[in-house]
Image (cartoon, rainbow, N blue to C red; front, top):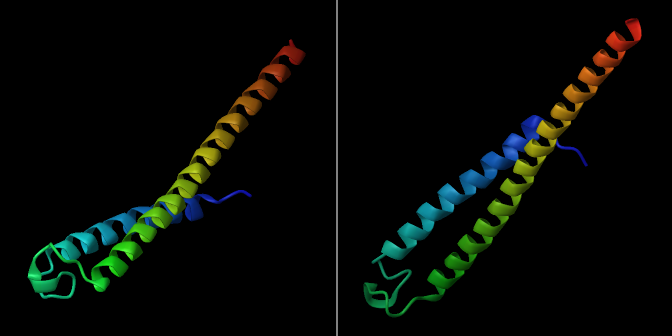
Amino acid sequence: MKLSRPVSWFLVAFGVWSWIVWTTFVKNLWKDTSGLAFHHGDHSAPTAYFWIHLTLAIVSFLLGTAIGVLGLRGLRALRAEAANAAVTAAEKQSARVDADA
């Protein structure tokens, strides 16, 4: 399967966005003193809310990373394809020049 350049960039952007959003979320989750994430506002007794949301964040980190890597691989493949096309074009031009001489 071949990814287009816009789709590849979208996947990379999605991966970066996922890391930014979920890193911010985890920082805010850790700082929570309202009693939602930790009993009594200290970090000694995490609640189910904390564990569920931490699990969501970890899964989102993994998916965001995988999606971003797919985008990077798509961009790398497009770059390699362009380089191969340039080499092939140069070889054809060289062959024409040799044939004309």
